[in-house]
Length: 288
Ligand code: PAF
Image 1 (tube, rainbow, N blue to C red):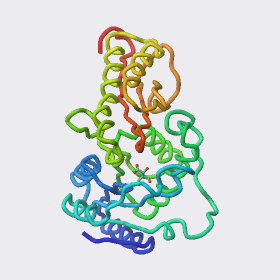
Image 2: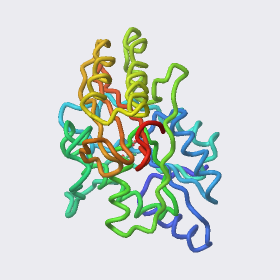
Image 3: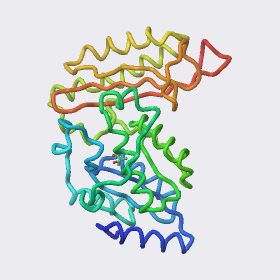
């Protein structure tokens, strides 16, 4: 595995791979790798000649008072995991390399951000779209891999790629879970022991919501009430428990088509998110 720190070096290397006709699978991350990330690498490995991973905790996507400083980092461990997982090129720039000068242009995401994490994290997706535009330009990927745990991020990346005619295939990958259903996340290490016990309630609440929809419930408020009542049994504070169309993230009442139930719960030192997608067939209301 080659490790690269500078924009110029990665861009040159990737240009050479593309000239040689190689396909490039890109897995952007903020590090502290877990099985969720490694499942993206595994998929990228199967689909492409070259697998590139970036590890960059992007300051632009953290708001004031968010956990930029506390975000877990362990580059030695990450390097080992990436190499063992079959990453060919690891890109680990410093913030100065990515944001050296006062920016002339940054991305501004217009849709799919006024709800869910975008609502409570102002500017977050502008930061994500800005850094991804830079990373895509540096790595020239054929395909990019994102976990569905951040379904809103996947929806925004879908918009970014389509609106800017980027010649990149977006590959969403299913959320990896612990045995008790908790979605794997770098932030799980910041849960207290008793919070870790409660955290599977997020997935239980989502499953219950999906079950109601599958049983024929089409009133989003009724589904949300049930989801909230399960989340309300934890010591965390519910940030949101919502249902929208996917990937447009718009309100639909009654529920139709592809919908996402998404939740976020703030525990003492970790904010957890999770979601489930339910496809409601057009002419079949009772049973999926
Ligand atoms: O999902 C993440 O880890 C980040 O938002 C990403 C896509 C690497 C951009 O910084």
